Amino acid sequence: MNNCQEEIIQLAQKLNNKLKIDHTDWHKLKGKKINRSVELISAALCQLLISENEIDAIKYLEESLKWLKGINKDTPC
Image 1 (cartoon, rainbow, N blue to C red):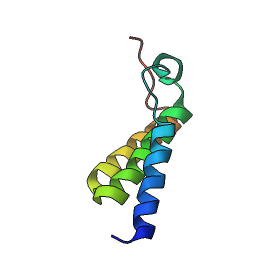
Image 2 (cartoon, rainbow, N blue to C red):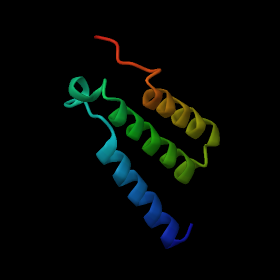
Image 3 (tube, helix red, strand yellow):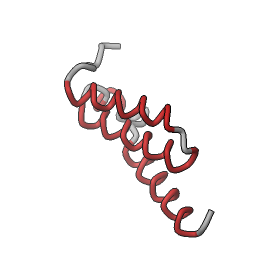
Image 4 (cartoon, rainbow, N blue to C red):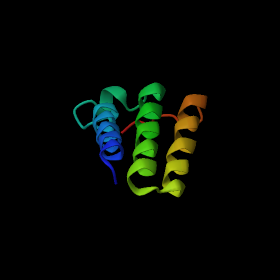
């Protein structure tokens, strides 16, 4: 892996860490379709860049689309 690829992976990981919904914001953001979708898209990007895992990346992207289309909705705790 060259330095450029490593830098891209590090940037993707930083982006993913910023976009994921952590436990402190979970109840506030878990039902917001944009936040859920962005989190899943970022995870898909990391799956492709780090482990070249196409199957999981596709699953994350499909779930993201379901959030954006309003198919997925938050259920109360």
